[in-house]
Length: 579
Image 1: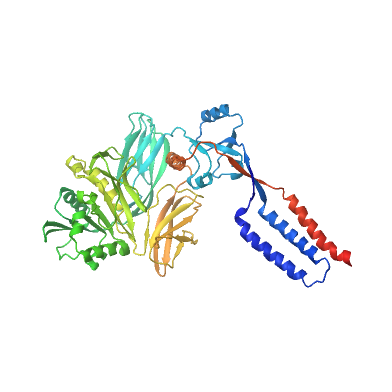
Image 2: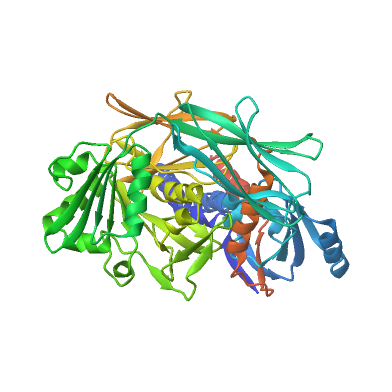
């Protein structure tokens, strides 16, 4: 099989336009001359322009070739797997991945094997349409999963949950404050994969780097990993809770929030038109929390589906406007009404399951309503158990709405596990709180950013004229989402490690967002595990059968150069011969 094409086929339209303009200029210059060889000169000019166009576009033949098998060696590949491929195919073409892909080297490869942890996520698009087979390697030992809140308020608890693969018996993990002050620790008693938790109370506001250190049985440091935490000054939150009927879940949650010294107003419906009001850390006052002025002062609204249905249309519209325009956060307490289609503000997608109890990442057992959440557009999973999403958040304008499928979480307190109850609800509510700034709302970025790699941050704002700058004052371009006008994103490439800030400026208003850039060697096990998962997801539906390989074989440009020289030679020589 052989077809005519161009190497630079994407540029044939601008190339053709340039050729037409050049030919038109030539004709305009030649036409006034009364040469007897005008037609031949026009033909020669046309040939010269056509030759230049061919040199620029590089004509080629799309040729079918047999192709070879190739292997792409990435970080952590095993020699045993490579030797096995060499035995089955002595002509195996070996390529080494060094943070970029040379597409020219892949032209003669009909089937590509990938060994190791895989290519980096931002390079996966270069392997689209190719026959690729991913040969996974053994997982590394170390912490491969880590969960903690990167932003905390002063005097809040820093809670870390991690999964350690293949630990060494006798080694211990120590959580250290800046200055290597030990705060909490655990010791491995077996070689089995272990899930562990560490806790500490943060006391001062600022940008800090805690560390997770591993030490052997003799106390010798094995490795030290940074744990950046942004601590904001302590703030008393204004919370309103609405329930269709009194429940133990509401009772224990309101007590938890009140013990944190937040202002909590609880309204529970007793009968039709009759309510019970409770006030914590504030004076008793008339209930106007759902008025426009009252909603502007709220940081969080907690309600159930029944309470939402009992609100008037004006109250519902006021709440929706406060979410979309003011950034108010709403947490929907789960109930049977929620799963039967009566959902406030947005439509969460649930899937029924026979499982009514799950284990959280740290092994704590909690009950559920027998559902789990499905992922949807603009959806953020805030609590997971394996592949099941137990709590999620969706943005609505500048605010967000969150819910969970967990039930009877107060049972943790009845069992004496007050600390785990606090950590659970802190994780559920923190993400949905009203942002500190009323101009720009920064979205939390996942993953581990390293120098010289793309770092993307998303934010929401109603302002169209603003400047975004980094710590050094360099301007960073931002792109607006095509379908969500208030959503923006910016991608830049950090050059150094440590804490940095992005400044959002509009007029006299400045909002700053702190972010941390890790060193290349930090959290290698987590990064390798995440990269391997991204590769598995990308190649999950790939066709591993051999396909016909079509390669562009460029025609030797020397032919077109000779045509150009001959045409130009004739145009130069013809007037002299005539004279």
